[in-house]
Length: 168
Image 1 (cartoon, rainbow, N blue to C red):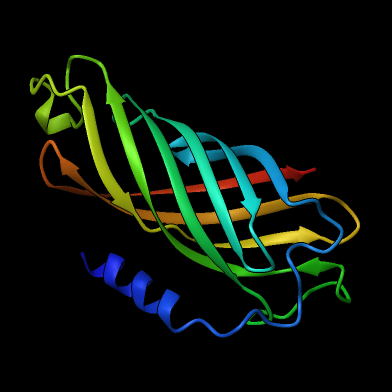
Image 2: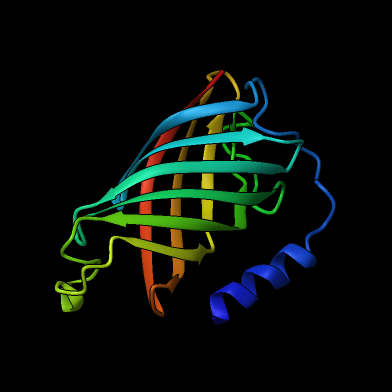
């Protein structure tokens, strides 16, 4: 529960969008993959200079479930200096979202394999850092996502990814 409260506090205390706009030279829509736990097909759509909607369809090899997620994330520009004479933008971001888990008949978690639960619902708090080149429509990111499953029962876990998105 503490990660959720921390994320909400960060979102409430955000400074106004700093000097940079969303990734310079990029379109608003990015599509790509994330490798980690879980591994995902991922999409991000910038709603303005800092806010974005982020979506994922992912598979957990550790727990054997499919996750569908949607997040609202806010990028902080100028907190980390741009690199390579301004050719590489480096925002960090934090957000809040939801996740739906779909599993086979064996249940969700290793210690609960006989539960028979095939549906779960929860909240997630993505926190990440991105690298985006101004001369190429590419973003590389590192993200950590604590999440809390509330249906069918309380379960706290954490996931993470290293990924890339191509922007249109």
